[in-house]
Every structure is written in C-alpha cells, then in structure tokens.
Image (cartoon, rainbow, N blue to C red; front, top):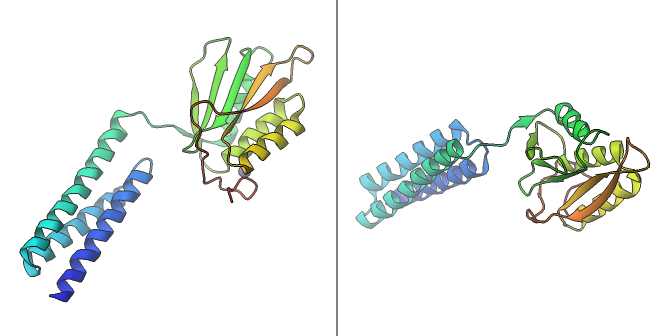
Amino acid sequence: MNAAYGVVLVSLALALWDLLRIWRHDPPRWRDRLSLGVWAGVATFAAERWAPGWMAVVAWVIAGFCVLGAVVATVLQTVVPSIPVVEEQQLRQRVLAVCGPDGPEATTVGVSSTGFVAVRTRGERLPVMAARLERGCPFCFIEEILTAVGEDAQRAVEQYRGERSRGVNAMAVLTRATTDAGRRRAEILPMTGNRKPFPHAGCRTHALL
Ligand SMILES: [Zn+2]
C-alpha cells in the first residue's frame, strides 16, 4: 500500500515536472512529451491497480491536467509564430544595415523578457525584427551594436550595463546623428512594454545577482 502511494506520487510529480519543461522550452521537446505520457500512464496504472479509489481519482485528474497542458502548449506553438533562432553574425549584419547612413531615422534595440533581441525602427516603416541568438549573450550583442554605431559608445555601454545590473530592462535608441553619418546618437531608456528583465544572460557581465 505504502509503495503504491510512493509510485503514484513520484510519477505524478515527474509528470508535472515534464509539463513545466514543455511550457518552458520553446519549442517543446518530444522527449518531454513522451516522458510526460509515460509518467502519467504509470501513475494512473499504479493508482488503479494498487491504491484506494480516491487516489485513483486524484491520479486521473492530475495526469489529465498534465496531458491537457501539454496539448495546449503544442497547439499554442503551432498557432503563435515562434521567434526565429539566428546566428549572431547574421543578426549583427541586419542590425548594422538598419543603423547605416541610409537606414531609418531611429532604430531601437533591446532584449525581451524572454531573451530575444527586438529591433524596431522609426521614420521608415520596417517590420519589427525579432530573433533569438543561437548562442551567446543577447545583452553583449546590444553592447556590440552600441560600440559599432554609437557616437559616445563607451558611455552608452556603461549606462546600458548599469541599468542591467540594477535589474532594469533597458533599450538603446539609436538616432541618426547630424555630424557623423556613420554614427548614431545612443540613448539608453527603460523598455516601454516589456519591462521584466530577462534573467538568464548566459554571461558573467550581464548575470543578474
Ligand atoms: Zn553579456
């Protein structure tokens, strides 16, 4: 009897854990879905077979919730377009192109609360660019852009890093400078919409303590 309780509870906990992993991973991984199916199956089987009736009900409810949650995550993934994953070099070229002398009046770059790099332009209407870096830190990427095109790049980088270390999700607004066509005036401002900072920077400089 006690062993049955243990098996059911552990299996349910593992199924819930898999559900959490499915929701946290973009896109959800098949091995998590498979694992969820197996643990939900083990929990309900063990509960039906060896546990009292009320426990079988609990097992069915939780297992059902997990399976339903996994299905909803999968459906949302198909309906909502996912953010493309790109190489850093590729994204840098694209951002530098919109920050060039012929680019739009102002370009805003920032990191979303889920860690993708968002690029918006003003003046010329270009679609919002959003991409997740294949590897590396998105905040370092923003600093590299600031260094490459900012007028007073060092100050801008320091300010950006300072905001990040205080847990403020900042964005860099790069406005075409009148004096030097190749450089842009860099303003570091708090994000307007996406205020929650992305917690996992993947580098020491931008880790939130
Ligand atoms: Zn970094």
